[in-house]
Image (spheres, one colour):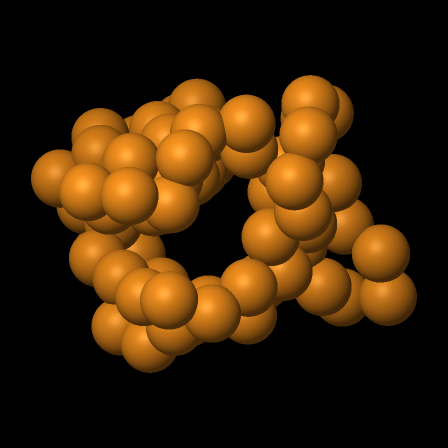
Length: 68
């Protein structure tokens, strides 16, 4: 997954999911915003999404425990 600054809906390009956020990086706000967006995109609870790698990087890896 790749994070972009600014507004926009999550979208796939060449198998990579791009997510846009306007949230600040401080206090994990941007990561929490990304989790909220992934939750809506996949139609699952936020608690089913865990950040595995990339806490401070634009390239992130998430674990999703339930997909509908």
